[in-house]
Each structure stands twice: as structure tokens, then as C-alpha cells.
Length: 107
Length: 368
Image (cartoon, rainbow over all chains, first blue to last red):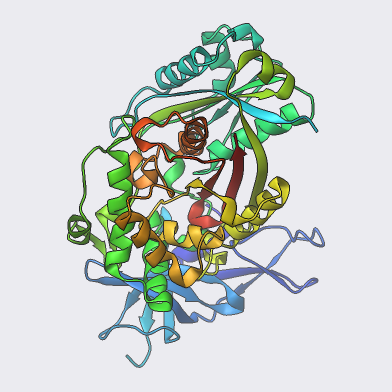
């Protein structure tokens, strides 16, 4: 397992970035392609907004933008139909694959 | 740069069954060589395989099976657009003078591993293409007031075209109403909006001008090529557009020295119904807010200009073979050999093949 995956398993979404070049890498990388140095990690704030969504069976899913413009696909939990631009809170896990879940705030 | 012609074609039937890929490869390659007069296996200088299958050394295996000892042989994998990428590589070998005659054979099985890109961590566990396709469809409906009926017409039209394609996996007619009432996969996608992974193989033979004159009486010329990759991750895409297609088309039109209005026939990558609507606007064939109306008009007038083979939705999608099959259709159309599917009086055709939610696109222009 990679460090990113191990951290997901712990419920932490780690963002790889280069302090030197101020670049964020997504999907995560180990080395900065600009300066060739090992990247640093920072924890996501776990907040995002909905870019687009749809629904499969009874579960909403969507494209969510989190820190530094990083976008991921994940499930969306909400009482009412979500809206584009709505704020969401992220939780993550890892069971063979990454899993990203979002809860609509103030829904 | 040497001019490059298509001088031979061969295909298997596409099927939902999981056929043996070596058997399929041999069948399509053999038909391809037999389709070309005065061509023997030992004339072939290059063998390129297009596949997502994990089998090793298929270029050499097909060569040995066909009794070919090529100067160049290898495999190419680029997910759903592996086929056109293999043709583009063969083009480059011939145009550069490295080779005069190259066989390009694409193949995949119905359960091929190319449907999921595990590297793309941004998709989480929502890896299947239905997730991005649903969001593209929802956005198209919202932004361009595209109706459910217009989306269903794409599928009904392509199934109708496939009925006249004996190699298509589906020969069942599907009415607009049947598509609209087919099983709901997500709120924005129905099962008949989706292309289906199939097994199948398609082969094509490319030749230099000098070689083409010797072995073909009806060569078709590749006059324009464009390929653009904008990313590998789906989530780097802007959902409103397929930027890679627009840029690849621009390259191809410039190389061919033509405008989109000169395209008489096109095979476009309808992995899902919405992809056909987005593709024809990114290719400049119609305005982006008129793509639904454009397809409706084609359907109502029985004009087969877009996806006469049945597209991916009607013909099936054996990933590594798809781009080659699309190219064969346009070749046959320009040769006047498409029988019931033939579009009359045509000179210029286009192929559009893409990968992974349009993160990479290939466009080719052919002329007779």
C-alpha cells in the first residue's frame, strides 16, 4: 500500500505538494516533477463543494472539489436533493480501493 | 513525408461471448490479407497489435501464426482509443520511410481489463464509466436543454444502423420509446444509452503510395491525423466539453486542409448517447446547442452520416478493435462497398475515437 492509501485507511486524506514549487499533485506523487525533490504531505480540510451530481439506486454521487482544486468522485449523503455549489464535508476510507463520502452541510 | 493508404481490411463479428483473442486476431488478420490482391504475408514489414488484454508478445505471436517476419512488431495500449493510436503509429512508420506495408490488428475480449483505470485514484470506488457518463448527460440536459428523447434518438438511430451491419453484436431494432423505457442505470442514464464491451477483432493494412499502387486498385488515403491527451484522470476534465476532441480535430482538419463542413460521413465515439452529441459539436459538424436537433434530423430523414456502422452502441465495443473497426467503416464507405449502409456520392470521411471520459482523443480524415 502507498502512504496515501494507508492514510485513507486511517480516515485521513493526504495531499501531496511541493514546498519549493508550490505545486499540488493529484493523484498523489512521490517526487515533484519540477524540482525533482521529494514531495511533502498535508492533511485535507475535508471540506468541498458539489460540481455535479446524479443518483444511482437511492444514493446520490457526484464530482466534488476539495482543497487546492482537487476533484474526486464520491457518494453524497443528504436529506433533500443536493444542489450544485453546495458545501459538503468529506470522510474517507480504503478497502482495496479509495472511498470518498460526502455529507451535505445545512441540508 | 510519404503518403499513406489503406489497402486492406478484415473483421470478425463482435460478440458478447468471451472468445479467445488469438483466434480472433488470426481471423481478422487473415481476412485482411486475403482482401488485398497480390499481397503475401512475407510482403508485410510491420505488425502492430492494439489491445487492452494482458497477453504478452502478441505482435510476435500473430506474426509467427501468419508466417510473417516483420521489421517492426509490438503492441499498443491506450484504453478505448488503442485502435486509432495503433493506426497512427503505423502511419508514422510508413510516412517516415521505415516501412512500406504494415498490418494493424486490434482485439479484445468482452471481459477485457481496459474498462477500469485503476491508476485514477480520483474516481475512488466509482470506477465504472457510468458515473462520469451520468454527470456529462445531466449537464448536457441542463446546459443545452437536451431532451431525454433526443438522447434516446442517438441510441435508436445507432441500433437501426447496426441492423444493416452483419458484424455488429446487436441486430435488434430499438425504438425511441424502447430506449426511453429501458432499464434505468442512474437518474441520467439508461441501459440502452450505454455501449457494451464485446469480444472482436478488426485488422487493417496500411501501405506507402508506391506499394499501394502495386497491391490495391481502390486505395483510401489518410490525409489528416490529430491526437490530443489532456490528462489521465477523469476529474481533470471540464464536464461541459471534450477538449481533447476539439484540439485533435483541429490538428486533423489543418493537416487535411479541409473544414468540418466537407465531412460526408463520420464514425464517432458514442460510448454513451451523450458522447455522440458532444463529439459532433466538438468536431465542428454542428453547433453545441444544436447537436440534439442535428441527430433528430438525421434520424427522421434516414441519413446515415453519423455512425453508419451502428457506432459503439449498436456495433459493440471491443476496446482494442473499435478504432480500427471505425476506420474500416469509413474506408468501405469511401470505396462504395458498404452495401445497405452505403451513403451515396461521398469523398471525405472522419473517424473519432477517444479514451477515459475523453481525456484523450484521436481524429483521422480519410479521402478516396
